[in-house]
Image 1 (cartoon, rainbow, N blue to C red):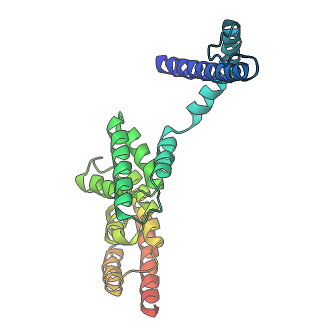
Image 2 (cartoon, rainbow, N blue to C red):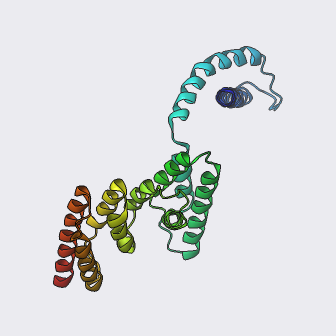
Length: 243
């Protein structure tokens, strides 16, 4: 609550001071140009305090509107698009691109370290993954491998759907076979978005999945999902051979 009050007061006084400075400079220049016969730069603005009170009254409702508007805007959006604007995303120069990646990486890690709990961390990862930042992709895989969230990776797997699926083809197959219902279905969506893998990978994966499918110990939902996976792998194999 105190932070919001201070935030509002900051907006309010910033508005007052900005308008006050602009208005007095404007009036001062006009007075100097049109009323000063001797070209004196010393301007005595006698209505300063009355104008200050008027500006302060006007700035109050304006500051309230600005406060609620800025409070609704996702600060991470401001950060992201500011960084993208400052650093040209279409830069051909590899050095410029590297600087951009390092700055985005630093911004992401700073925010990640400031999160108070795992729920905030997962929300942050989800948001950044939607921007398709490569470092976040690498970071997600590291979190999964290190078991940072102690096996609760469904949000991380879902975030991976924002990236090219081919590099995590084998991981997604394992999640379908061994993951819980949510992870398995998220992983199937990753596989379902793949259109082309090597013929060897497709054939070997199909044979291994078929062996798993023929195991009668599966739950009904997994049996159904494995059936869809077999069909998808067969389609990928056919498409790859025809290409």
